[in-house]
Amino acid sequence: MLSFIFYPVFFVLSFLKTKLFRKARVLSSVCSKRLLFISNLILIKILCSALPVYSSQLREIADLYIESMGNNTYEAQIKANKTGMYRALLMVADKNGIRPDEIGKIPYQQLKEAFTISSIKNEVRNDGFYAATVNYQYNLQTINKALLKYGSDSVNERFYEYLILPILKQRKVVNIWGNDQEWHKKWETARNMLEYSKIFYPKSSKELAIKVSSQNVFNLSYADFTDIFPAILFKNVMLNVCELFTDSRSGETVINIKLLLINWDEVRNIKEQQYPIKDIKEIPYIIDTVITSTIEEYGRYNFASLDLDLEEGKGNAEGVEEKTSSDDKPKTLLLNLYAINEGELQIVEDKLKKVEQIQSFTITHEHGRKYKVSIITNGSEFDLAEGLYINGLTFKKYGQIYHLIDLKRGI
Image (cartoon, rainbow, N blue to C red; front, side):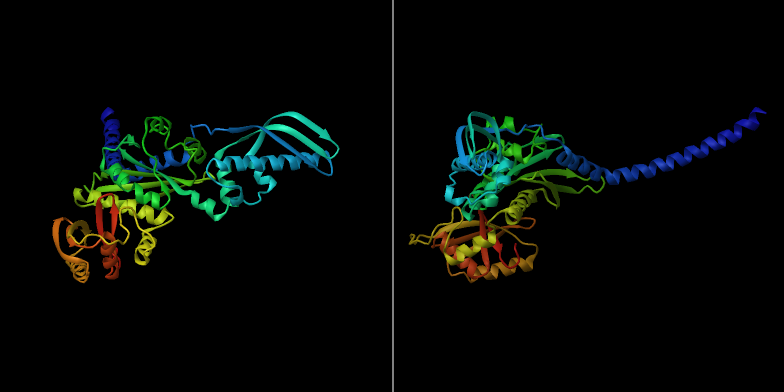
């Protein structure tokens, strides 16, 4: 009797065990395929949904006398307050070198969004007259919005397009201010080009490392950043997060770039780009590409406008000399070149042969797609840049590092 009961039960249990084992294998496969997806979701959730932990600071303008007349006392009070708020805005703008004639008329409602009265004293109310001494409170976020909306083009020129923080993420370690990694070294080298393109990259300091840390950086709002950098005018904030990882299934090494963009209305957007790595030596080149694309897409002046300036002789990038009568002694210039194949390399070589300012040149293969071009010229950097440009070439410069570019192919 017991055996009659036991064998069916044993059969059912064995069947269930087999089914569960197969299901577990399927789940394991699905989980491994979605591991990277889940990790990305976690970081996106941190970037988008975390609440700010840095309290926005209210600033104050004290003891401002206001007065006005009107058809009734209420109208007089409103007009006095409007004039007072406008004067307060001009005082704040003056701290950033913005003149009164650079700011147009601002509607009363817009001023009320920027300023609130925190105290009133010596108030006088008569029929059609109002006077008082007031204190106004404000935050820089609403002031920036008003200046950009009602300021002249010269005011807009004073604003950076972005305040940028390049961040290196290595598993659970978030590095914002370090300078011992290639990621931050490359951004430091590009500081002048970022400045030229109206992208503000703050310099590291002990005080700044306390205010913007790995514990709060993804939680800070635009308003928070205006309080941390009160002397800097900027329209948006960008956190440029770099993470290098290896896919456990494919073994492929990837640099993952996430951009967290925050505008003055506190709207957050995320953009993501992945760069597969075939050779670890390609990492510096990929970082250069990330920096270049950031400037091209988010800077006010991109490299196309820089090329135009070189062609017309109107301006120059950092380190590119104006056209002067330099000495005739030959100089050697080393440039990095990246070519996908021998055909592209040959095109660049043919163009270099046509540049009159080049006495001689050699191209040496270093690794992967990277080549080193050694140019001997007796002209200035401007002369060389002009000769290269005429023949469809140019260069980008990060500090003392030159990259030779084929204008048509973008390599």
